[in-house]
Image (cartoon, rainbow, N blue to C red; front, side):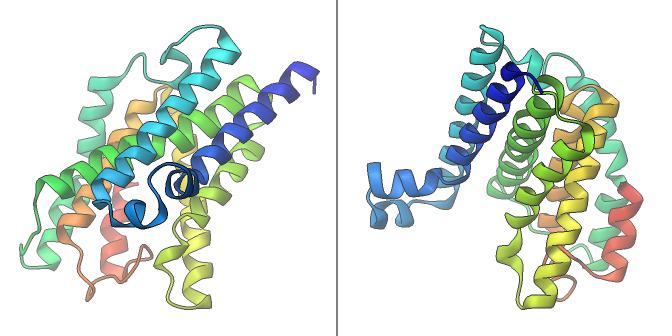
Length: 231
């Protein structure tokens, strides 16, 4: 690996770690721990996402000497991603409401968290920023970049675990999902496809799922039938 690619790799990883642990920077350096912890969840999560966007654009500028969303997969494919992301998630939008007798939760908060914070925010940071820049511009192969990204994506969902066995299951499931979304990003040549696929999947899940059906991301047999039909 050339010195230039090593520099890019270190820069991308360093910036990602700032994103990963920024809550401590905000809690202890700007807001104060109590004020940060007392922020509305939508506000604190939005700050985290916007910080990730700024970091990704900054790294992209250092690498390409320009501020551009092109290298982050956002230049083309918005309407195509919106259309097919919705079409592919129809099994979840149809099946999950049936499982809960159409007793749905639907609010601005649920839409915002699913489509922007999870759909756009997570895909932009994990797929476009970390995986995409390492794979396309730092010389990493698909599997090294995908697995490296997946480890952090999987670890980020461990808060849902209730015990060791569920922690292992959640980690393996979400790490595998991260690799799958990385492949979708590569195959479709656009981040918008995975943004809307992820966002609509989360929206269908959040408006339908309750603790009786699924206590964490692992789901239940019927839930996973509809989820894997989508994928």
